Length: 193
Image (tube, rainbow, N blue to C red):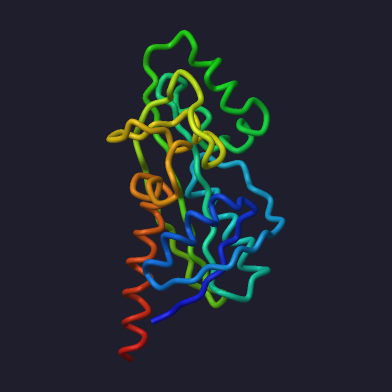
């Protein structure tokens, strides 16, 4: 069974990670970059739900959209839902500077992913990976805070990993797997009717 969805994102790195992972489930993705205003909210789930609701007014095909954040324990979860803005303004170098005198470098990445259908269904999936913020940037791959985040169970930062390696650990991969499992089950049930 082959399924096709659009992934609403302007981030090519996100798209390539999702495309590679979902291909394993027989799901083809097409990248679409829409001008959707990301709302300010207290949780990633709330942000992605509002973005998906806005997308439902525009998109005429089934889609996925996600929002991710880096949550640093010693900074009380900052940058969290503001990760995109923080990355654009101070980047990972700014985060390293904020942590320069702190010993607790534990952090986690989280993704909230929404699946939307033009005629109604809106479902949210999430994924989380715990790790630490390194003391220096390492690696050339990936995007965003990848050069300074090392997931538990690995000696490499996300930026030192290939897409395949990152998809073994990442928050986005966990959310995508949860979505794909649900989606394939749903599609199988529709075929049997």
